[in-house]
Image 1 (tube, one colour):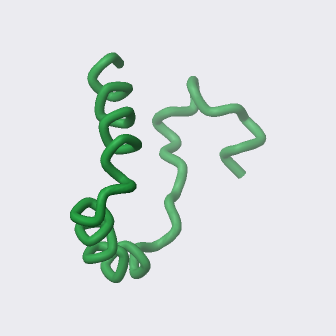
Image 2 (cartoon, rainbow, N blue to C red):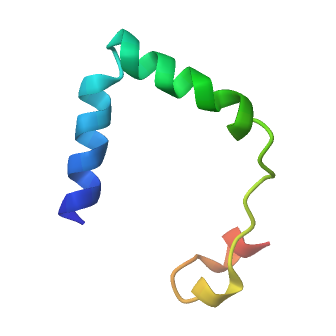
Length: 53
């Protein structure tokens, strides 16, 4: 969990820098073509019942 928090923190610190913004912008075209996520029924013990609909 600490690794995830550290990566998010680093991203927030770097996002304002032009080189980071250019990197993110380069991948936006690809990310826009992704389909909407589908909830995994295998995680039913974690996901609230109303969210799986």
